Image 1 (spheres, rainbow, N blue to C red):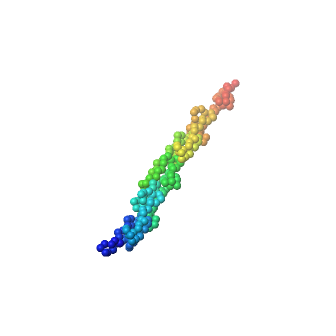
Image 2: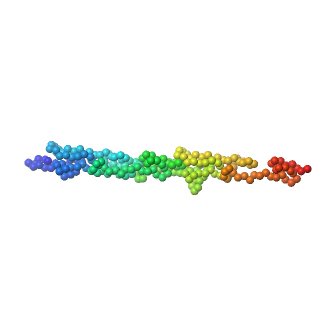
Image 3: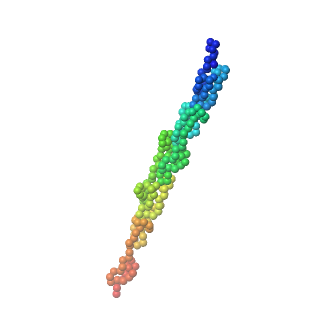
Length: 223
């Protein structure tokens, strides 16, 4: 209390506290930890009210000044008057579609067959994602969309397989042209399914007035 013309007056409140006065009782403001006690010497109180630092997964000067959830986390931090003097709902956001990982803050990578990246940000939805499906490589295709995640098959006349991977170019392909079959000629035979070609090449029989197995094997004129 203050002595004024023989009368005692209540001392004003301590900084960062609330209440009627120090003798009646003050408590630290929301977001502050500590206590206020009345004493008999100036300034007639002691105060340990101190701002609480921002909690885990958030950033800012301190709780009373305002904290915001870190990139990749959704939620909010609010100041309260009970320990720990804040409430926090900051929680890690799950990896978005077409990516995998523990969470966005821990790191997400695009799924096999997808190119791009996932980055944590502080605005909703708390990530940016550029994961996009890679087109089927040369000499392969898929339905209804010709993309690696849909499952690419080697084109007719090609043997091999296409597999999705997580490293550039985000697929492996062994599709290769099948050679022309026996009794035919050409660069390759890009038609059909295994053995990746069809062939109707057949030996021609020996003509009239000749004899033999067939023309390719050899015919000779009759006597």
